[in-house]
Image (tube, rainbow over the protein chains, first blue to last red):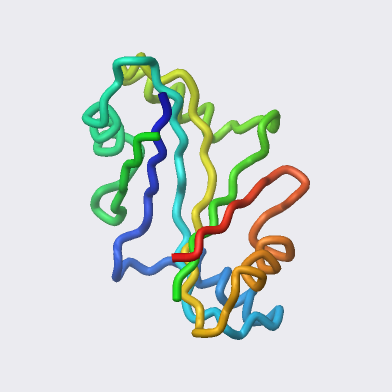
Length: 76
Length: 76
C-alpha cells in the first residue's frame, strides 16, 4: 500500500524558496503568478497492515517540523 | 485560482533524500516502510484567466528539470 504526505510551511511562515520561484517566474514573463508556496511531498510504500495512524506518527516524529510546518496524509 | 504542481524524480533516478528518510524511519522503529520517494510540491496562486497550458509552460521552463524529474499538474 502507498501513502502520500504533503508537508507545507504554515500560513504566516516566510517561505523564501517559494518567494524565489515567484520572482523567477515573474522575471521569465509569467506575470499572472500571484503567489507561490513550496513544500515537500513524500511518497511512502508501506507493508500491508499499516494504518494512517502509523503515518501520522511518522509525520509527528520525523517528517514534519510541526512548529512551522503542517502536513496532510492521503492513503492511496 | 490555484494550481498544485508535484515534481518527483523519475523512476530509476537515485533519490538519496528519500533513502535517508527511509533509513531514519527504520532506525526509529517504523519497520513497515518499504520505500520512500521525496519530491517537491509547488502551490501556485494564479490570476483569473490562467490556464493549465501556462502552468505546463512554467514546469517545462523552470519548475522541473525534465531530464531527471517528472511533474504533474492539478488545477484546484
